[in-house]
Structures are given as structure tokens and as C-alpha cells.
Amino acid sequence: MIEKFKREWLTSPGTNIMAGIVVALALIPEAIAFSIIAGVDPMVGLYASFLIAVIISLVGGRPAMISAATGAVALLVVPLVREYGVEYLFAATILMGVIQIILGIFKVGKLLKFIPNSVMIGFVNALAIMIFMAQLQHIFGISFDTYIYVAITIAILYLLPKFLKKIPAPLVALVVLTACYIFFGAEVRTVGDLGSIEKSLPSFIIPDVPFTLETLKIIFPYSLSMAIVGLVESLLTARIVDNATDTYSSKNKESRGQGIANFVTGFFGGMGGCAMIGQSVINVKSGATTRLSTFTAGAVLMLLIIVFGDLVVQIPMPILAGIMVVVTISTFDWKTFKYMKAAPRTDVFVMLLTVGIILVTDNLAVGVIAGVFFSAIFFATKISKVKVTSKLTENHYIFLFEGQIFFASIDTMIEQIEFKQYDKDIRLDFSQAHLWDDSAVDAIDTMVRKFEDKGNTVYVDKLNADSRKIVKELSQLNEQHLT
Image 1 (cartoon, helix red, strand yellow):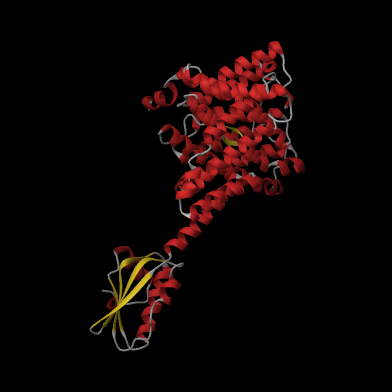
Image 2 (cartoon, helix red, strand yellow):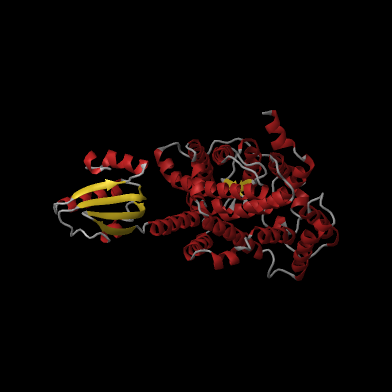
């Protein structure tokens, strides 16, 4: 336990604290922007980002991953806030947390293994494109100074690490260029242009909503959507960070941790959130490996608001936009174009479909679920091809079955069988096949009955152990049929 604590909290503390500070600065405009999307006061998003980051650092399953208020969740609650007000948003966030905790208890993290690589590639690329597109409003059509700041920011991020690796390049860009703006001025937009910041800590509240079944009916659909979208983005981001750091994390613990964070946040006037791939990439690229970086991001975010709020609002937006542009470039899987040439067409289709649906709907869960659904359809189609060959040996007519026999493969299998055999010994050889469900067993019963109606003696040969077990449990055949 002590060794685990040291590994997850005390490894390279300086590097992790520096990384957390960079992330904290990047979280501020994001949180304000997501609050605007949801139609609530900017402090709702800022409080959520502070609380979720700090809490998830303590109870989450993935060290060094950043969770906060996100656009994916904010988009879902727009109708709720518009029609019922912010208090219903707080109640929905609390229920969102409860649902996620329940899903974590039932080990929803195990479902992650059913997401194929093509969907993962689509998910990552769609997120990179979404993050990039979100930066365009802060870059184009504003001023020439904006272009200069963006260009210098990108140059610092690419060139500085070649000469100085101990201090994160994004932090240098933020401090140096913000100082230049404060002392020399420039025609650029700043964080303060997005919304006002209050220098106050969040306080405990009970959502001012009627505690009735009617309220539950109103918030439950939103809470369920928020919970699913939040977990999909969080668990997939956790897998990405796992791969980037060559470590493993508990997805079920992360599910429960996300639920606890959102549950508590709702009682402190915050909106729902989840893992953020952009900020997580910034964190990892800055050298973060421990929970200390995530805790620092949340704690420093609140410190910046309360103590340095007057300076924070002066941070030029093109600096943050430039940092996020570099993040999108490193997040996008540039091997995708090679993958599209080499991968099966069905996998390429699923990848492109995932990207397209996410970009059109701005809903990560819908895109991922659609990708998984079509992958399952294509996979079922691919393995549903059962080959049946027949040969006559003396008075035995042998049918050899090769492939996976289940509900989707039965029709093509039976179509290959010639039932016009009379007064023969028929052997159905399943040595090269596997039976998966009751439909497969019913198909065998049907074949045996059709042959026996024509005076044949039928034997079901060479079933493997699992297939024989399911036949004995579900079939109408007797022991004489099985050999």
C-alpha cells in the first residue's frame, strides 16, 4: 500500500507539479467556454473543473489523466438548462454520479474490451478534429496580432524542448507571451473576454428542485445520457493514456471515481464532467505520470481564480489556442492514412463512420456505439460463412461442417445440404465446427428430423466438449445420435 502511494503520488513530484500547472491554465478557458455552451454562469464550469480534477485524483483509476467539465457533457444539458434552469442541472449532475457509481459497481469497464481498434482510431481522430475546430474561432478573423501570437506559441512548443526539457514548453509560452501582452499590449482576445471570474470558493448547496417523481422523470434521461457519454469518453481516454505511458489502469475503479466526482460536484454548484483527452495529452506530454499532476491541475485552477484572477483574465486566447492546436496534431493518429490502405474495407468503413457520426452529432457515445454496432454486424457476417462438404463412403453419407454455427450462419449452412437421401447412414461431422447457441442446436435437430423422415439413420459425430454440452442440454436428440 505504501509503495503504491509512493508510485502514484511521489514519483518525480517536480515534473508532475509543473505539468499540472500547465493543465490548470489550459482548463480555465475550456471551463468558461463549456459553461457558455450549457447556458450557465462561467463559475459553474470552473467549480466543476476544480472539484472533479481534485476528487478524481483521489478516487479515480487512472493516474495522470485529467477530468473536468467537458463540452461533450455540456452539449447534452442545453435543453435542460433552457427549460428548467440551473438548479435542475445540479440535480441531474448528482444523479449522473449515482448512475456512474452503479455502473462501476457492475464492472462496466469490462465492456471496453468489446470496442475494436477501428472504433478507437475513429474516436481519437474525431476528438482531435473537434478540438482543432474549436480553436478556429480564437484564431481567424480577429487580428494580425492573433496570428503572430499563435505562430510564436507553436514555435515555442516545437523548438524549446530541443534545448530545455525540465520546464514544460506550454508553461514557458503562457508566462512569456502573457507578460509580453501585459507590458506591450496587443490586439487579441483574452480569457476575460469569454466571461467574468469571481474570486470565491464553491459552497455546499442542496439543489432547489421539488423532490418528486416528476422531477426524477425530467432529469433522469439527461443524467443517463451524461453518465454514458462521460464514461465512454473517460474509459477510452484512460486506454489512450495507458498506451501512452505503457501502464495499466482499473477501468471499473475509474467508472466509480467519475461517479463520485460528479455526485459531489452537483452539491457544490458544478456541472457534470469527465476525462478530457486534450488536457490529458498535455499532461502526459509534459512528463506527468502520477495523481499529483491531476490534483495540482485542480488545486492550481482554484488558486488562479481566487488569488490571481486579475492576471488570469489577461491571458491571450491565441496562446491557449496555439497550445491546443499542437495537442491536436500530436493526438491525431497520422498512421490512419496508411491504415486505410491496408485494413479491410469494413474496418475502414467503421473508422470513418465513427468519425463522421461524432463530428455531426458532437456526441462521442453515439459515434462509439454506432461503430461497435456495425463492427459486430460485419464480424457476424464474416464468421457466419459455414462450409459444408459431402462424400459417400460405402453406405455412409458424410457431411463435414466447417465454421462457427450460430443464429446468423444457419440458413447458409442448411442451403448447402442435399436432403434427398434415402435409407442410408448419414453422419454429420462437426469436427471442424463449433456450436454457439440454441439456434445451432435447433438446426441440428431439424437436419436430423429431415433425414430420418426419409428412412435414414443419422449420427451426429465429433462434437467438441462445449458443443456436445449445449446439445445435451437443449437438443431433442437421444444418446444414440451422438457419437
